[in-house]
Image 1 (tube, helix red, strand yellow):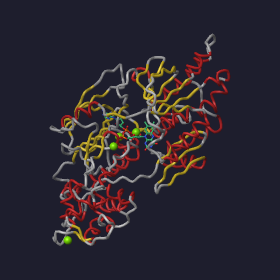
Image 2: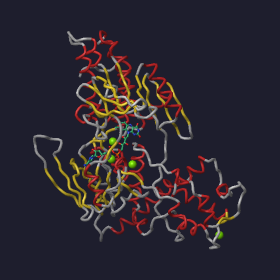
Image 3: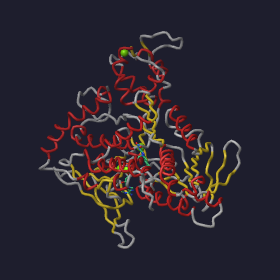
Image 4: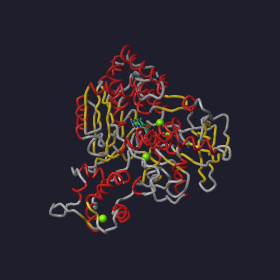
Length: 551
Ligand code: FAD
Ligand code: MG
Ligand code: MG
Ligand code: MG
Ligand code: MG
């Protein structure tokens, strides 16, 4: 129950945390918190942060929050763009005070002077821009990631991306354009086929979902209004790995492949795109080493995420220039500077290795200072170890080890009562291999935002308590627990009103009923009643009238 423990603990302490801060208020000014970004991470932080203790300002180039899981539906008009966005100003309006929002882009973080430089007016080509800077006591970086082309030539110029609401709208117009272009008189069959070849690069959840959406759109709606070219449409998914949806359970991945095969969506696995020109996409087939040139009507590039340039610059300032992605500790504090937190897609938690801390763990666990650890002593601290080092839990589960004493067995499998430090090292020697970084998902970003808000809300208590799980410290005071991710499962909509889902506890569900589960989960996850009403309305409209096909 350690996961629930964190939340219960945090909630029960919010009240007392507030009191402490309010008492201090007359002498100390409120601390300034600056938040960068209004995506999943930023808004979930803003929803929970206690503004009676902080003076909060938000900077983002978009004055709305976008419900990204429904972006693929926007590409085909199943759901309208306006239905999945919520104005930030609605989200930050609070009865107890004000959060300030500035529509601007952060250009530079200066951790030395605790300022961020921003530029407004970037969305407006005519009006010019204004530069300003903000002082912070705490900075929350939640700026997400940008697309990653892996420097493949031609991708930036010729491919569509599916990251922002504007991207989805542009794709929708282009799909219709491709159909309109293909029915123009005087074209050869070859030209019509090229115009109607839709290529998706990347067989991850986004690429697969878009392919499925597009397939439904084409065969449920468009072939009825463009009957002359209906046999010329082709949808291809290019995947460099051996399977699509390879982060999902194998059963889901093969279900998706079979469904796509029945639907006539071509899946080219083991192919790497080497360049894209205005009419052709070039790829290398890994097994044969051959290069192939494929003509296309539209390409959607949906693979990989990269670090934003100003975050790269910040990483250089704090000594993280060698890393690919901004590193934080388990409390989401950016490594190499103070008072800066980062969460969501722009950062990754640099998990501590058990082996690096093994002597400290041993000493803390060896309560009677005997120099050996008994099974009893180990059992007492195992729960704390698991909070601090989640890989231990994964290791125990994957190896089907149920108890502390199972780790203490010697090489012959005999139970041991006690181990010394060498024996302890041996027992835990393989657990670090289980370390996994968290996926770049909305689920992770949102949980991190909530976690960080709760930490800041009871800052006063926690300031006097250094890091570390409760029982490693004997002071008896409460400490911050590190961030702990709870995976609630993931969906893969596959078209034709079928979906696949991976649910907690190794549960896999596929088919039409899963699609209904998907509808209800995504309806319930909407940020406001307004967007919930709009999204559900769009779904109903689609059932009755089909999708709109004007560009
Ligand atoms: P974002 O949500 O990307 O937010 C970043 C914010 O920072 C934005 O408001 C942006 O405008 C702002 N920003 C950018 N640059 C600056 C700057 N210089 N200064 C200030 N602000 C800046 N995840 C799931 O869990 N389930 C799904 O089904 C799912 N489906 C997806 C479908 C699609 C098409 C996409 C693109 C993503 C999907 N994801 C899904 C992933 C999910 O959207 C991301 O993991 C999530 O958005 C990450 O949250 P974030 O807050 O880190 O970044
Ligand atoms: Mg964000
Ligand atoms: Mg978002
Ligand atoms: Mg991350
Ligand atoms: Mg002992």
